[in-house]
Image (tube, rainbow, N blue to C red):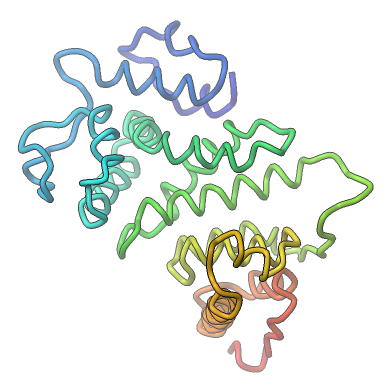
Amino acid sequence: MSQFVRSVLPTAGLDAPRLVLGAQPFDVAANSLRLLTTGPEPLSVDGAALGGGLPRRRIPLSELAAILMHPSCDHATSDRVWRLLIGRARADGPVWVVGAVGVALPGLRQAAYRLRGFSGDVQAELLTAFVAALHTVKPGGAKVVQRLLSATFTTARAALRADEPIRTKAPVDLPVAAGGHPDFVLAKAVAVGVITPGEAELIGATRLEGVSVADYAERAGRGYWAVAKERSRAEERLVAAIRSGELSDEDAAVIAEATMTLAVDRAHLG
């Protein structure tokens, strides 16, 4: 069982042996959510208080996860729900952390598929990164869960990449500054709202993974210049965040190395 499962998933009041029915961390998380939402007092939220077309009653988190995945659930409702889940996870301890993990499992499974090429424990790294992101991502603003999952993805990818065996032909050979890995810095920039999850993915793919802007644009079904401008504007906001102090000097060095275009003038950082 992973360190995440041992340290975060609760056992008090639950049928603990059944927590480990699944061989993978995601199975354990899914079983835990099921146990937390079974019985006369399931872990739930107040749909009437949240509004946004949600059922006007207590909604078990297992049902809430299905509701949020339905096309009829709009972004504003999703944002309200996730602000509540993040607040409860931060204030009320492991049970609500597990609940938030369970609700996020569809997105986490998609992230695991995208990271399937790594040899490390992808699911465990994603769960560890998600729990950390619950305490760092700003719940204000739009697209809360997208920012949460993007920060999770980039942090997990950095950890998996760092542990990957050395290959004779690495796709990208970028220097890494003492301040940390570029993926972690991009995740931090998403968490504080400097760039969007999509912009972090664009920068990560084209600056860290060796994907050309042309190839990225073709895969996304977009024009080359639209993608190039999006990346340029996102990188300009990173520079502005460094100059304003929203991102640290150490972050500045990592971002500069990752993007290879950001010549940060330290005279403007004061």
